[in-house]
Image (cartoon, rainbow, N blue to C red):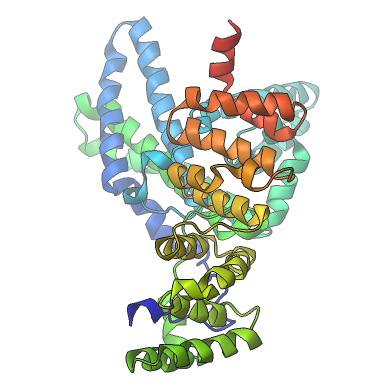
Length: 441
């Protein structure tokens, strides 16, 4: 019975996210990433674009900037998406793009400029101080990239406490990451040295560009994966949950208690004893009130129940918060959608649950679902403290998700009237900065 088929991993131990393999066990994946279809095509185009560097100097400068921006913007995109669990380019969609990523190369260049000025100043005072500053700068750069990807803030990327906090969150593996990045940097000239004898003269510049971009994107994939590996300590919300390791799956018991219970309930339903199945699942759910497996089973059998009994409506009000508390946001969205198919007028009782569910939808860059969940939020939950955050989320979904900034302006104006000093109002104003600028001009 499809409605009752639960995932194999339903025991308390299995409810934890699957362990993520350490990055040194996946080195081949990083080296192969640039040869996936999308990055390979883009990398080839950038290499061919380097022929433009033979043009007059004005065009040469513009093309050089274009190549640098193209390669570095894609590198930030690769790292940012990898940090949230999107590890393959086939899963990249326009909906996952963040407009803030476009300016990250400029902010990183500003960080390098500040580092260079500090190193130059200290080096002018004392040679050893200059060398020490260079070493510290090299150690801080991976953390700088991580902070930029997470916050898109230049100030945060220059804040030593932010950087040290990121390094501490990753722990000793941060030093190992720095070592691998150093080896990758050393690998670029070695690769060029190997390719020079077999590369025709007219292809030298494209070959150099191809190699430089290749190693840049390998490093981006590596940094993003390390962030993904430590997403819990770095407080990163994943778009894709980790897949269980094959060896760990093979080592599991043949049948868990949850699977046995699922089979018992499914058998009752298949025999036509729906009331018996509901009674049995309800008893397990009553005893295991905070057990996701028992609540999931009861919810799925209630989807077969007569909606007029009120049991599905009542249970969903408790089930959705449990899933959200257990960090099972995608499952909460699926459960909510399944209930709406049975009960089209279903409404969540609690404002914080609705907002949390909408935030999960936005993490998946599903702007339409985000807006649908928050439609009429202030009328359904008058006076609650979550209203400004809900307004901000609606504005983000309209502007960044659907590209309809003009439709978000009435919401922005309502925020400015009702919550002029709220942080969400400031965030929303930043999102709609272009529209507000046009309005004021």
